Amino acid sequence: MYALHATPQPLNARTPILAPELAPKLSLNALFEGRSIEIVQPKRTLFWEGDPASEVFEVRYGTLRLCHILPDGRRAVVGFIFEGDVIGLSFRDKYLFTAEAVTEVGLLRMPRSRLHAMADEMPELRSQVLSKLRDEMCAAQDQLLAVLHRSAEQRVATFLVSIAERTLGAIHKGAQIHLCMSRADIADYLGLTVETVCRVFTKLRTEGVISLTSPHCVVIEKLRTLHAVAGEDEPAEARPLH
Amino acid sequence: MYALHATPQPLNARTPILAPELAPKLSLNALFEGRSIEIVQPKRTLFWEGDPASEVFEVRYGTLRLCHILPDGRRAVVGFIFEGDVIGLSFRDKYLFTAEAVTEVGLLRMPRSRLHAMADEMPELRSQVLSKLRDEMCAAQDQLLAVLHRSAEQRVATFLVSIAERTLGAIHKGAQIHLCMSRADIADYLGLTVETVCRVFTKLRTEGVISLTSPHCVVIEKLRTLHAVAGEDEPAEARPLH
DNA sequence: CGAGAATTTGAAACCCATCAATGACGGTGG
DNA sequence: CCACCGTCATTGATGGGTTTCAAATTCTCG
Image 1 (spheres, each protein chain N blue to C red):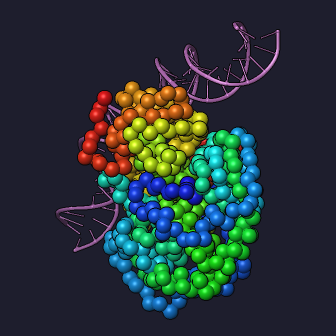
Image 2: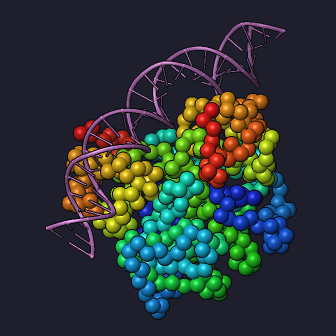
Image 3: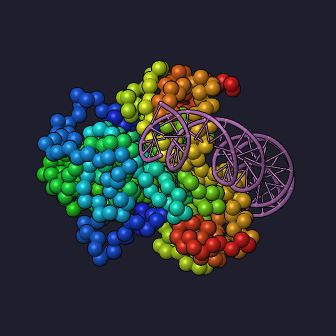
């Protein structure tokens, strides 16, 4: 959430995905063209929560983790950023979270003032920014609903589906998902503990829903069952108990 | 969340509140001036999830409940709307939730197309709409954090603080909060059950943190303790065990 | 290869959901 | 006026899922 997905995949397909041929010619991403790519090493911080939010970023490759420190000292991960995503449109004067590189990240940077100035000139760009903000709202609501009333198993299954769709573009049986983030990152994102996330992975593996060639490489073996566990659709199709 | 608070009061005071004298002259709310007030009776629906999102609304008095039906049939309350709030800026083509009147509601209505047309003409209004959208994002993130990693007691305490701030403008010892929504509404908003919400109210009452003159009228007796239970600040001040 | 970090597994405790029942309140009709 | 009824709020008992604490194992990387 709070990030602009290249291909937004909301929890419930309420948000129609804009067909490429319908996309406005002046792409938001096109604004970054010509700027030089900046490299951020893994575990380095792109910006800190509370810093003046003076810039927007487009991620060209790699993965970022958006973190927020809770009053009790624990960490909440409010989102992950992948290739093609844009960060920074939804801030007020300060960044609301810290952005840390999970992998090596290549990104483009632009002052917010410049984006705003250009948006003032171009109505088309403006409506795109608005549209992106609305996408973020949808994503934020979906994330809330994906977590609020749901079991650990449902959350993890939904997470896997969502990551597959965002990083692979689509999900299919046999798809290999590379989870570059740690179990702790996933746990903090889903509002669970590391141990619970682990146990769910193990459970899904023993049930044959997924297989794990390594802790960070998930293969989807039973797509239907995974969707059923995620509980997003096909409510009539009960998940096999074993 | 998803609603524009007249006086946004995020969970963590990261969002500075705009002083009235600094507010732009062309208020978003001023756009609705001259339009006739429409009355919605309690339990009536203003619009349904999935309806074409053709209008924006400003609530003049009363309380609305924003609901979303989950795939498993349960209901999630994604927000409450009070006097002065505006709904509709963050939608794409369809409403993302159903809006139901909790009390009698008086509101003003305006076509989205008209708002967009005016925003195209007036840069000042435009930046205000953007600002409101960003407020919504902040509120959405705060709501997520308020619920994700937190116990039932923390959620309810945070809810009380938040409602007090939104409906009374500020919170103080002895403040009387009128909760016009039902326990079920609160439960569905916080991701809890009715019974758990009740038990927390009872617990806070027996601890002397609040008193209940009726189920819908809460008086704050120990503000410090309530804040401590909410867990927003003063982490050093441990809450008394009994 | 080796050391530290990350992941996985186990056992016990706790919190919340669920099921069940009672109590409080308001409205309606006899 | 009061008995009846439906809705909502409250309280109790129980079970399940998740957290917590602890330890073993695997992975990663210098």
